[in-house]
Length: 144
Image 1 (cartoon, rainbow, N blue to C red):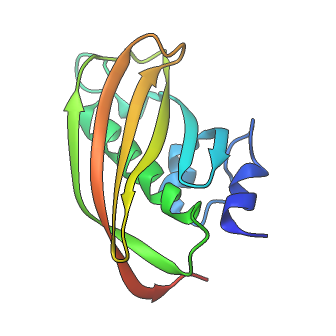
Image 2 (image 1 turned 60 degrees about the horizontal axis):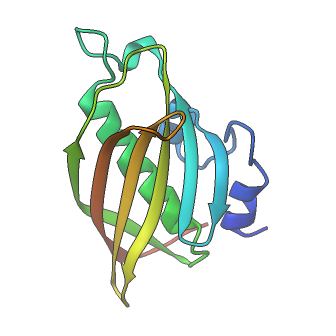
């Protein structure tokens, strides 16, 4: 089974078999998955909140970085891609009893570098929460 097929096998469910311990802790539900594009839903937990009860910006950034990393696995390549940078623009807050949806897109894929974006939305996709852009570098580390 390819990495993309593995992700697709969890559509509608929590991704409990991710190779990433961090992703397992974030515990997303897979909404959609195709090569170079993922959509995950996250239930906001109390430990993700800032002192005023909104989703912490650092958690938003971590979600964006993590799902963009998972998007690299959807390409079914033998090499591992590492994040070089992660630029986040925050547009709206999210309170603790909501959930968010993160959607990724590959903007440009070169021989060594990939530029990818992620948008995070409220659960009904009526309000953009944050948008992130990352550049990733192909390493010589071979995935298992």
